[in-house]
Image (cartoon, rainbow over all chains, first blue to last red; front, side, top):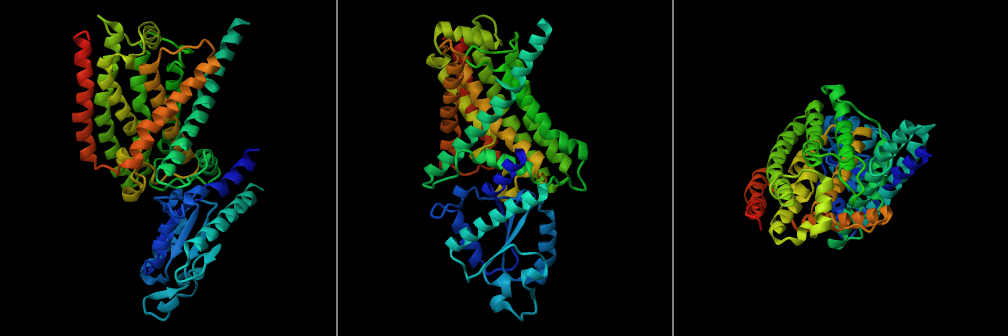
Length: 148
Length: 320
């Protein structure tokens, strides 16, 4: 019974940790907009966590630069299982306009498994909420798979 | 046969009412109410009332990571220590006349037990070996010193008012006195003390303007920075129960004389008053203020709040 409750709660209280790996700040502002009274993601239980140890969903914005690569990998390792990685915007998908720059290493999927990828430059807050909700469902599935 | 029944009733008191289960459920409900009403005050829809329950069970299902630099034993024992002391405290606070463990000086026991959850946070934080936790525990210690002074003065005031010539630290007697002479809050000389106690509650629980120790935007939740999974769930539960324990203490000390004769109805009224106190002194202040700096917090408690408490103490000592 407890396993069922835990798996269900997984989808209802996803805490977000946000990493900016060299984004132009556009996606970060849109993510903050999701948490403000207008869109209020807290009604689904989303909360911005202060540290990766508390996080369930890691939100990555921006292309992976050579400075942020190592930090990104280290931060992802600190997140307890089950976890989800969500990328926001075009940059983590394809490096966008920064492609070819001497300091850009490549898209996010080269370094970790990406569960949900939200496209757009920048994606609308509605799209971000939908992506995060999908990530929350994936969290529940991952937890159920862990229990077996 | 008799020993078995006493053991069973004591187990019931500790595990169900007014101990573990009751305190945890009501505490988490109060935390949910706090979050929901805060959201409504900010014109948001807000999380469902049961959100803290979801948070708790979710954290229970997460992986527990113990950092390499951490002291394993202290790191894991700290949340349990805080939890146990809170449950014990709950047993000593009578729910309108219903108190399973009544002694002569339970107010002093409560005063000592109140510091243990904060100490548990300090122990856990320092065991985790993170520099963020280091800053957090130093702030937690200062916060503790800040609110402890007015709290002690308020409790002294109550003890003096009830005792008359001598100090009375028995919760039972405080309840009886209020049933006979009217609620303590209806005596005008105790109103400053009541306000001081209401201002101590948010610092003790650690909500918005006074959450300098756990400031998640500047020092990543301070002492909790390295916690994950079940121990973190325990700490979150501790905060929720602390909310209930502190409001329950206020309810009993200042509004303790109410007695309808039915335990269930008494408990219901008790919880309702606790909810009102929670909204009044935590949600409302949270919604209208921003986080203080640690030195401002210290100054606020040692001047304004202590002065309020001291005024009451002097008035009571003069026999008013």
